[in-house]
Length: 111
Ligand code: HEC
Ligand code: HEC
Ligand code: HEC
Image (tube, rainbow, N blue to C red; front, top):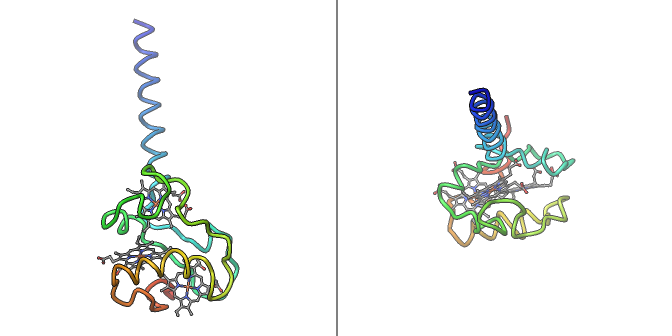
């Protein structure tokens, strides 16, 4: 009896933790300026992650289907020729013909 209660409690705790971990791990939006500690004057890019997840496959952007590291290594984050523009966001927006996919205000939204 005692053992069973302990088991149930453990299961309950694990379920709670994994749900919370999932929510924290799979946010609707990601502030990329914050996440990559970028200092610059352009308005922070709040990346609509969930919207992209719904339209694309994880491996269109991530090295693995489970998420984790991106396919493209983001090293240069300063100035106009940063890796987000040149290697990640822009090439796909151009390839997929996203309307205004390279317009500054599509991604850098003033609050
Ligand atoms: C498809 C999305 C996207 C578009 C369109 C875009 N950017 Fe960016 N840009 C980013 C991301 C992502 C970063 C890195 C995260 C951040 O700085 O918030 C960035 C960073 C920058 C940076 C370096 C960081 C800083 O604040 O100085 C500059 C400068 C910049 N962008 C200027 C522009 C200008 C000017 C345009 C329009 C010609 C533009 N961007 C269009 C996504 C975009
Ligand atoms: C259009 C590109 C794109 C697609 C498609 C995409 N992601 Fe992401 N994802 C990103 C970017 C950009 C980040 C933020 C940068 C980073 O964490 O290195 C990110 C971050 C994440 C994170 C970490 C969140 C955090 O804040 O720590 C997880 C987990 C994740 N993605 C899972 C997924 C899964 C699972 C899928 C498919 C269902 C998916 N992603 C599809 C671009 C994408
Ligand atoms: C692998 C392809 C791919 C990559 C990489 C990608 N995008 Fe997109 N993005 C799309 C597509 C496709 C759409 C259009 C979705 C739609 O509305 O049908 C889109 C649309 C958007 C929009 C417009 C959303 C709206 O509500 O209209 C924003 C903002 C955006 N992307 C930001 C980014 C930023 C910032 C990055 C880089 C960090 C990025 N995207 C990288 C494919 C991509």
